[in-house]
Figure (cartoon, one colour):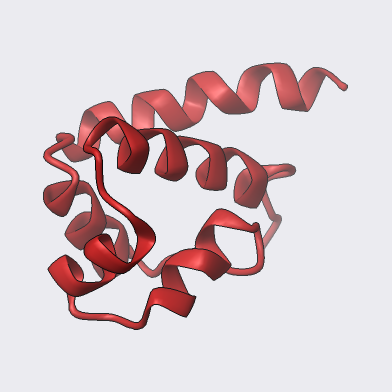
Length: 83
């Protein structure tokens, strides 16, 4: 399947912005979603993309509706794809 260019970069930015807005450290978010802090770090440094389950769990933990999270992601992708 074809990959979306810059998806990991856009996801990392949206996730980090939402986490900072929620005033959570990586460790606090990791505890909330019951994963290792390193997993959050990998997502924020563009090393991994989450599964659909992880995406939904993260969005809920950050109190961001999944549709809004996706809209933010799409908005972040647009300028990156122009480069």
